[in-house]
Length: 396
Image (cartoon, rainbow, N blue to C red; front, side):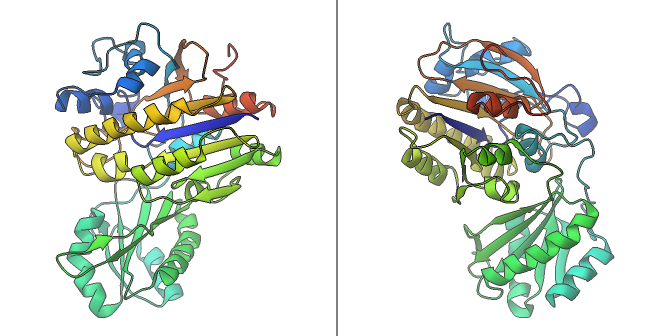
């Protein structure tokens, strides 16, 4: 039985895209700059697979410190350029699943009021709670700022970021998670009219000065404009297993079963549990969120480097359990250079590693469109071609 594992290293970009300047990201390079800041990365498994060979496809001068090119890489290696308009989670994942967004999601000003009065008014009327915040902010910062007031008044904390997101934070003892999720479902219906990429539920606990976000985060994405490769696979009888936030990104469409996880370590443990021979044809689609959420947005290069090295140790164990009928595709959805200005995602190329046990690696070159992943998955499972992209398998 064939199995494919699509592993997203969330935000691990590998160099500014040709149109990076249009996004204010000229000069960004997540992996290369993290390696330089750390004095070199120790990624022996990824190095053997061919991670160090990828910069040479773009600019040989920008090698990943500590990760030299492999003389005989064990995986095929390439680099992908995003075609869709945007540099956010939803856009990147959807393009990998075969879609192309020619119109980006709407962004909102950082200063109060970020969201228009009509949107906030409709949300307040439907949920019967008032809104505070309504500005761009770090989630942890705005919870410390407005959490004490929320505990007194029961108002929603609503905020945005540089991405197209409407985030709603609620103390679990004041607004129970079930009510928060209902509120986010209402916000999602309203947000559709404003083309907002995601509504995100952000539950938290604690007392002033010691608030902490819980693992109950949920994402509610904009409606997908067309079927993805996930739906095509599921319709063909392939089990589609989502690990992490994948189910939320795809609005639960094309997902056979899902495992919500708290972070990288939890996701990696679940992947190891799911490893071994496949009982049926299966796509396992997983996202390692900590790179972006904990280290990229917070501009923590040292933490980012340490998380990469821990993931390399996980991969060393994981690939030994893959059977001859398995394919492992490792890539990313966008960049988030922790050495770059601001706290936003960065418009970058993303790395591509394709490991099939027993097959030697080769160069896959510079791929124009993340949707080459979807086309390749369609070829792997033999379900017929997707509308976009070129397969990087079987000589494609």
